[in-house]
Length: 302
Ligand SMILES: O=C(O)CCC(=O)C(=O)O
Image 1 (spheres, rainbow, N blue to C red):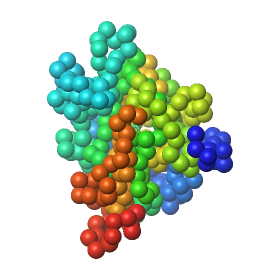
Image 2: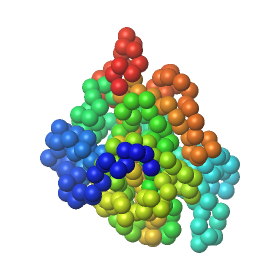
Image 3: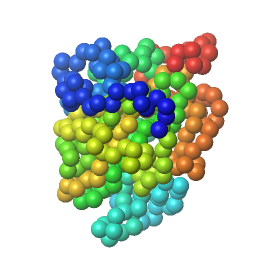
Image 4: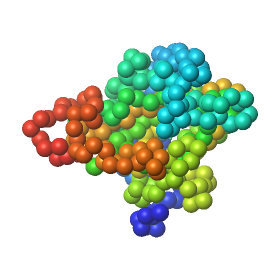
């Protein structure tokens, strides 16, 4: 734990304290909640995109099952020809592998990309990061398979991609109604102020030591399909296994200022290390707000 940990108030707020509704969304109020707690719930935000995203998720899920047996080993588990990441399955599955991250990205799903460009979502992103914002990475769709699908242990995303400046803001949306039985996202409000914490290797890759960070220190966020949770790159979060009879998919968008860049990345303590120095073009994402200036030194806008 870093030296900051003692000074930060981690008493859990109520869900109501960190929640707004898309129908009455005030971006400035949303930004204030996000800045204070490092997280924010916006009910119904992704409703307009749900049917189309769900359709593509279902198709990608079917492809993932086809790709499972021929997936090849990678550092994080196995990768299917469709891009799906598989990790070891619990013994109850009767097979070696389970789905973790679907091969569904902006390059494969127009519905996913459209949801990343949602004006209401971008109004919140802009209020926090604006005026100039790019997409970081290509969108992510995680699935917990039915009846025992994997937990994602409590962690900070910065363990996977530490940034030079503010870092990315994530927006995770539920594609199905989600509660304690099928893997609600847990957050630790205020933990974005703790700095970068030490992570260890776990069954779900880098995560915090559960002896220091048991689930009881976090706030589970139950929600309906289409509800979204914004969280800071250093906000501790994770989700428990899916015990329900149906898969539990989520889709995630990440946004950052265009001058920001990854300084350290990895998926395990062994491969975590310095990223390619500086903000080179390989890290640049599609602009979703404002514009990228070529006359401003990298970092000045971050
Ligand atoms: O599927 C989930 O709930 C976990 C998502 C998450 O923690 C992450 O992508 O960093």
